[in-house]
Image (cartoon, rainbow, N blue to C red; front, side, top):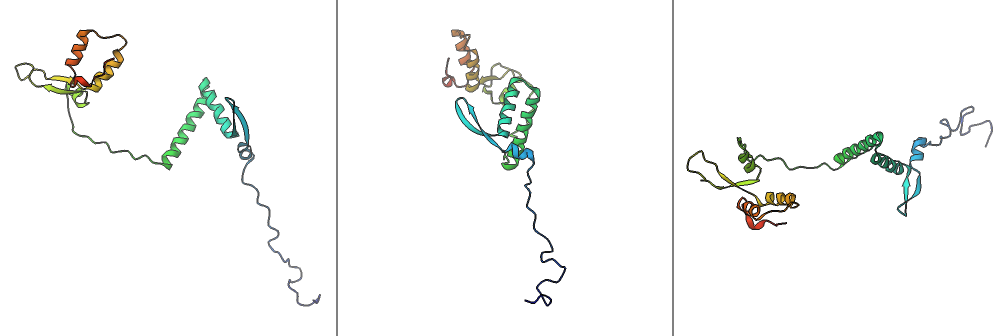
Length: 175
């Protein structure tokens, strides 16, 4: 190789014009580094490995249950954030609401029939066109009522009246 002749690089010009590549710095902040650390916690005699974030969330839940208003607000924010994420990830497809018929009832009987609580049993209770229509209660409604009234007990007269007003008597489980 000759010193003064043609060389690979021109005199006074670097062979690496961009220079040495710099080390890539981590994009994490100090907070991110701390929050991702894990440690072991004993809960009810069982050891669990938790991140700092999980431990802070558990402590926030405990404080919220203890009555801290700020902790309750934080828990509600966490729940809202989770619900938003779930809604975006797995959208719920609800069945469309179907209106079977429009109904303008003027009495409580009309409302009971519309809601499926009672059904029309006998058409003719009286003798005129304005007489009442007798309704019978659906068994599921009677069953719910019996659960609520089971503490006080029922007389024979109560039982007969309940049976008389129920559409299907043999579907009732008596307390």
